Length: 452
Ligand code: UD1
Ligand code: CA
Image 1: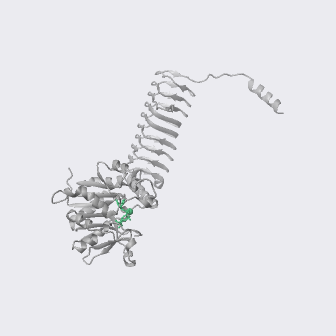
Image 2: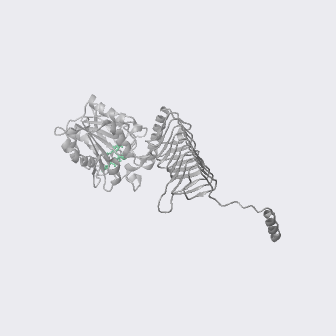
Image 3: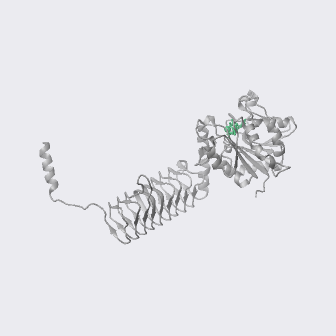
């Protein structure tokens, strides 16, 4: 059970018009996971008493992604204030004094770079000097479209003015709102209910509650938090900017944990990438979602991974592709132009060149020669290839699945294996070599005569 007494509301119902996308804005990925997942991850350690995500109609993928967080549909999207009002309908009964919720933390689904520590700082700020509304302020280099925090005589904030509605003096204010606020639960409903739509966009702006609070003598205050964590993503260019910031955060964390990134600016990580100590990553490597690498492994240039596990001391690439379900145990070597999918390579196994291993099991220390292909697909179904330990698969072998190769077997180069290879056997499954002495010169002479 959560000990905390705050509920989190995440707004994600906006149509994200400026993204020009068929996909909801909050589902656009940063470091391999949707923006909304980053926010939920940052919230998690703070254990909100409840989390409600406000979505638009037909956003089932968001519902699935945020579960078990509750979702509520706002339709039509009439603005951020209306979105919070929609969420409050499901929280109403849990608000003090009837319920356990004292504060409501409002987050915007398009600010995915917020860290837990920063959210905790806002919550702590409220404990230190309580205000009806505590706003996360920031001073970005370019305050551009953000809402301006207009100071009050008492040192607090008297109102937030949207950039589009600001006078030149208001527009010049450098302290802006980062899309994060903490509101005393006992006041939030009356404040949000009092909002109107008298503004440039004819929407219920959540930001309007600051002025409404001031009007009835309730105080709002701002604390300044890091601007680079509150970048709001409205366009693809801002998405790319956030991606770049997140990549540096992940790269720095990896290096701090003992990973060598030879050229960090060329390595792309996912939020869930796990790299062990003394892993070395050469330039130009992409880690898609769900990849783990064990201690001391070496990842050579131009490799691309997703859903893969790489064991300690393994060596992978250059130009290797590991797809979901690839499991390389310790000390495995996978070389250039090798693709592995849904396959386990046992400890010390090697596939050094030009190979496809899909839906397969490869035993420890087995050597897979250049050009080997597991023929796993017949146009309808996938079939498995199982290779034992200490086996040797000669170059350019086609293993037509389903098929098994026993421990210590030898498969001759150029074989097309369609039946079980017994353990310890030598299997040759290729056309026989026929030599016709002198025939080459005869042919050459004949062709020369014909062409002269
Ligand atoms: C908003 C703030 C601005 C602040 C900035 C911080 C308002 C009116 N303005 O501007 O002061 O500096 O964020 O990033 O709040 N949403 C809904 N339902 C709606 C409308 C929006 O759920 O009806 C959601 C959006 O999906 C989005 C979030 O609310 O996740 C913010 O909306 P957005 O349109 O991006 O607001 P900004 O113009 O960026
Ligand atoms: Ca925004």
